[in-house]
Length: 77
Image (cartoon, rainbow, N blue to C red):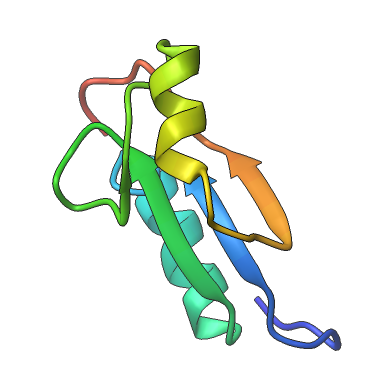
């Protein structure tokens, strides 16, 4: 993935998942700062995406240029 834009701070929901880990890798390789959002400890922001209040608390005080939703219910690649 190449880009002509400046580096962005990106919040990636599902970053440690089957789809998200590939997106995170491509974005990082393109020079962006990727912060994962999800339930696992691998993510920079931990929250259950189905719990609105917990999600809002988890991102409070953070600033991101872009939010990408790549969370899925897939169990296997």
